[in-house]
Every structure is written in structure tokens, then in C-alpha cells.
Amino acid sequence: MTISHFGAVLLFSLFTSVVFGITQRSEPRMMIRFGAFCFALFVGGTIAASWAMWLIKH
Amino acid sequence: MTSNVQATARTAQKASTMPATLVLIAGWLIPGAGHFLLRKWIRGSLLFVSIVAMFILGIALKGKVYSPNTSELLDMLNFAGDLGNGLLYGLARLFDLGQGSVQIAVADYGTKFIVVAGLLNIISAVDAHSLATGRKAS
Image (cartoon, rainbow over all chains, first blue to last red; front, side, top):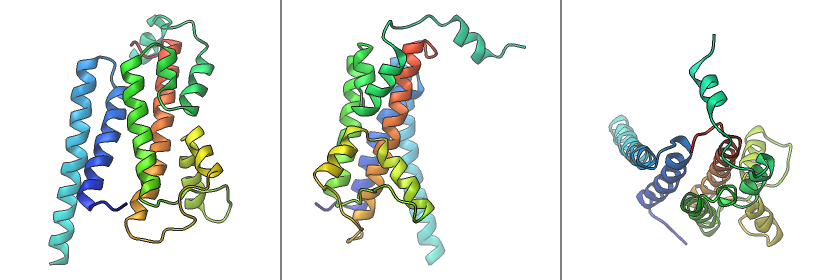
């Protein structure tokens, strides 16, 4: 099996955010919000870091 | 002086009559099982699917499954992470799943998926334990 780099980021972020959301908050509504927040941070942080590395290289 | 955390822990009521240690061990052996014992079906299912899917993806990506060793610190830490998968790790060792060493670039992702699945499983088992003791409200 092969997977693209971005696909790996999305899957990693999804599964990790689900666990973080459930375990780090008590109320269902807050779980969803925190999970979405973690997902956005994972994906956004990866994209930002990728562009930063591209800029450093160029 | 009493902190908010201490006060919350003291006032929180015991959520279950299930022995907390049993919940912790069940949650470690099978992802989400601790929550199932506490009748948190949806949470347990989501945890099970997330952790097992991450582990299977790691195996499918030809990730490395670490064995007990004392060679390098990082190898020991990765083994500790793998061990967090509980029975999944046992099955992987039993059926010789995963690779002895990383062969292709994407396999490093697989290795990390397996380690992180183990760490997430530990977090979920501890969460179930906290629910059983009443430290976490709901």
C-alpha cells in the first residue's frame, strides 16, 4: 500500500483529533469543537511548516 | 489551599461500580474496551475505529514493529509506544506483521502510525480509568 504525503497527514490528523477530542473534553459539544480545533491545527501546522521549509530551501 | 482540580476531584461522584483497574487494563488490551465497560458505546466505538484503523494503516504501509531491545534509546521509546497497542501489538508479533526495518520512504509513516496508535490507546485507557474513578465528570 502506498499513500500520498498529504493523505497521510489527513488520516493522521483525523484519527488523532478524534481521540484527543473524546479524551480531553467532557461534554459532547466541546469534544467535537476540540477535535475540529486539533484537526485544523494539525493540518494547518503541517501546511505552514511545509511552506516554511520550501521558503528556506529557495 | 485547595486547587480547582482537587476540589473537582473531591466532589465528582463515582461514575461506575466497575473496578477502575479492570477498566484501565481492558482499555489498554482492546482499544475502546474501557469505555465499553462504562457503557460509553459511541465514544468507545470511535476510539476503537480510530486506533485500530491507525494501527492497520501502519502495518499496511510496511511500518516497523519494534521488539524489546536495549540497543538505542529511540528504539526503546518506540517499543514502549508500540506496546501501548495492547493485544494488537501481541497479534502483530504473533503473526510476524510489520517489517524488521524500514525499506521504503513511506514505511516511516507506517512506523509512526503504529507508535502513535499505541500512545493514543494509552490516553484512551487512562481516560476510561478517570471516568471509572470519577476524576472525569462524564
